Image (cartoon, rainbow, N blue to C red; front, top):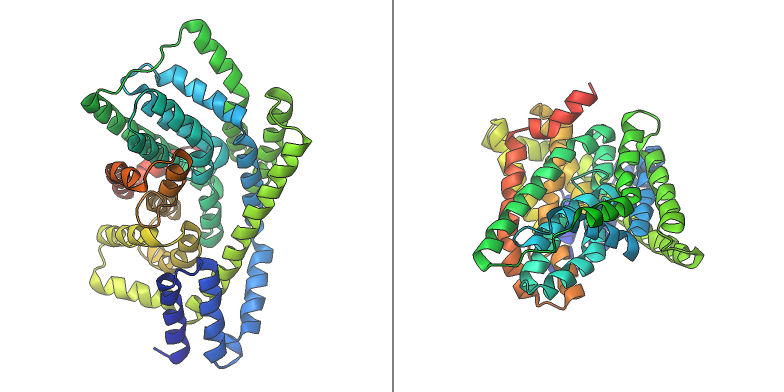
Length: 431
């Protein structure tokens, strides 16, 4: 190991020891590497050239702020309330009904936003308060809200899948379609766990909707429910690209927020634009830092060394998939999802290609893997969100979340070793 690489790795480790924000830590590590590295190939000028060239050709990145904008518009109170009432009319009458409503509402909402944080912070407040009124344990209510929010980036559209497509070259349309069945499987698995706990703890049944009330809630929810249909049909029919679909989703969100539900005016729109700009700026800093970091990883041939290391242990594809899953589950406990996507996924892609693993299948697997990290201590950002909005002690949230993490890990290994769960729809409609 040469001196620049040693300094680079030490600085990166210090990022976590000193709790430095991950983007700043990657920048710091990269700058120190360039200070010690000799020659033009390892100079900061060459790195800047590569960074700007890659970003300028990554048109798919434009979709990210567009999906963020659509998510923030859809996250307005009236629209989330419509989704919640529609889900309640479908499954609220079951034992532990509001727990099932929580999961189903997250599945529906995920088709509009592609963001776990948007789900937990938007629908989450309403869901936890409703469950609290029906005497559900606060920790359980928060845990269901956090766990079900992980469906968001698996079921299309998905912001993490946009970044994965950029890195791997996989079809974003195939990735979106590949996430549909796993998203539904996640929802069914969580609802199964909710049913088990509800029966054990004798949680109440929810409200039973009559035919008239059910039709009314469905009719009011239709404009919001059409969002994923319009978005995905536009992509799969070839009418629009994924980037154009992001713009279409944002435009449609404005239309229904302004003219259908009338929950937004120019003042609220300006606030949404400001929030979108802030979120996009944060993501841009992480992307830039990760590109510089990844450039160093590439010129030091770390992916090749990593692949050789794992292949030295075993050349069994299924065992290597198990090792990669465990590795990313551990990374998800400590590192931000975006940093994992941009830094660590490129390190394993050569190995994935060498083993002949389908890139769409691997993309959906790895996105679900990273989502589990959002509800796993000590990083678990979704746990902190639901704990904060509900004023529930974090300890209680963690205690209830851990069994749900195990349920989702079961789903993870199911789709890992049964690839057709992911590839069935892409193979059916896109080949």
